[in-house]
Length: 108
Image (cartoon, rainbow, N blue to C red; front, side, top):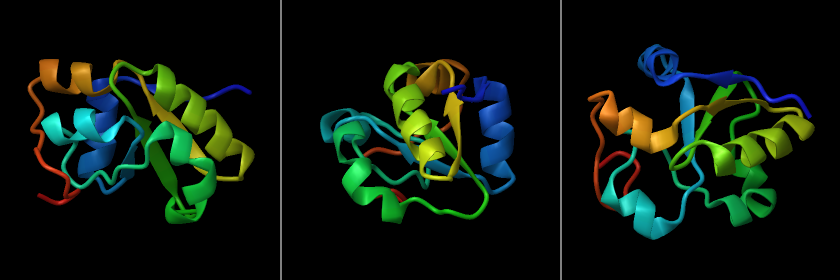
């Protein structure tokens, strides 16, 4: 399946404009730093937690570098969700100087 992909600059712009971001890394990665407001749904949990992903509007999917998020976005697109992969992942987000939050809470 063809999965649309955006770079970090575009992801930051869309996030600031209100696009939902879903983080598909593991908990230990997430607590070290994640996009503000992004809930954690580890890749292996995506199929059983798909109902937690908004079905309306675009959903940006992020992981550490872009591989897991591409897989998650492909699955979500197969479920009719407008999922977009964030190339470079959280590593690129941090390297670009964007803010991250730590801990388990998506809004922390």
